[in-house]
Length: 131
Image 1: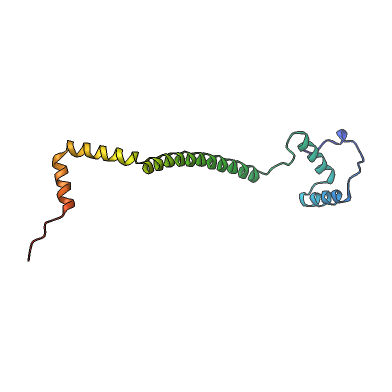
Image 2: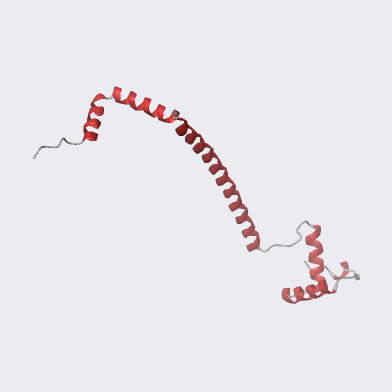
């Protein structure tokens, strides 16, 4: 992003010592001049990107966004399941589900008498023979 020398102007600004120290350290680590870092910071700030991200940071941010999206979807599913479970629990507690199951079972047994007899024999077990 280096600017052409003809486009540059010398300016002086009062900056806290701690900021100057940070700028010099960042300059040393990045291997560019403090002026270049200041130009980059101004460009990033005015472009809406206060800090530029590396590709790894950008990928991590996208992954984090996907994870958050999936967590939100999962939480909505869990909430829906909890609502359904609570409704079923109420039906169990007030006896409506038991009554419904009893009616359906009796209806099925009337419609399938042979299977009903076989189930009855199975549940009764084999008669004990005297010794």
